[in-house]
Amino acid sequence: MSGKRWQLDDIAWGDFDPAQVDPDILQVVKAAAMVEYNGGDYATYLCNVFADDPEFQSEAREWAEEECQHGAALGRWAEMADPDFDFAACFERFVAGFRPDVEASESIRGSRSGELVARCIVEVGTSGYYTALAEATEEPVLKEICKRIAADELRHYKLFYSYLRRYLEVEQISRLRRLMIAFARINESEDDELAFAFYAANASESQDYDRKRWAQEYMKRAFSYYQPKHVERAILMTWKAAGLDPQGTSAKMASRAAYWLLKQRTRGYDPANSQQQQAA
Figure 1 (cartoon, rainbow, N blue to C red):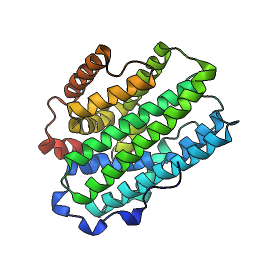
Figure 2 (figure 1 turned 180 degrees about the horizontal axis):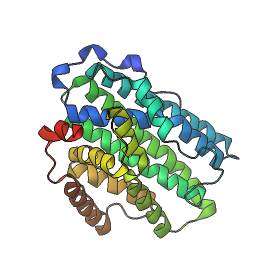
Figure 3 (figure 1 turned 60 degrees about the horizontal axis):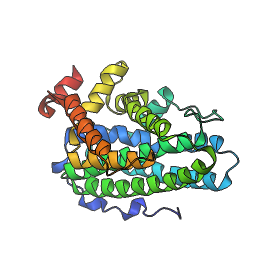
Figure 4 (figure 1 turned 120 degrees about the horizontal axis):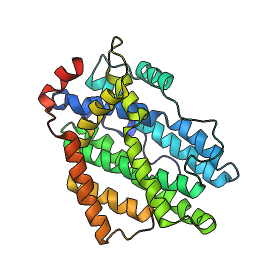
């Protein structure tokens, strides 16, 4: 990568239309801002894992700067949409309750290639997610922000995939192992990070943290914006990272299954009642 492709000042903030703010989208944007703005911790982890690769370390630090910018943009928009939202205070609450293991010296995926597969999956998911949000929202500033972030995340996927190909020449982990790592990372979308981010950004001080509850609150909103085309593209890129044929029958079957699963997760969800459910 060669520096940030855009800056916060490039956003047309003056086009903000409060009448077009959807309260459910606002809640997931607040949570996304927490996770994105925490990119520095992940850069520290990656630099530890790739301690003898200064070229990758440089790329990881630049990647983290862009991730933090994503969080800053989303946080600024959220404060415009909800004047009572304090991005800095909520982020402090988030990192006080959730931090990745920045002391780790080896990848939790078992190899550097495995780590890069996992990073590819994260970028696949976020690119699709922000594309879906951009298409779901009618608020022009958020639409612009999400389009810019989605493009960045796709570029990040290509970055990590290029290093994956390089490391596979040495480590040569199997396609099956790569696919297992990919699925494991997808399943981690239900872990504490996103659940706690949603809680930290949206819950009142009197509300306690319950991982299952807050994960459900996040997922039923976030998953509702996906369309089949978003899931299909994500599976295609996942199959590519795993070394499988992205145009093959297995990828098509996986796309249909993944979309069906997403719909099951959002079944019975009524956005009109979500605020009442949140306050209960």
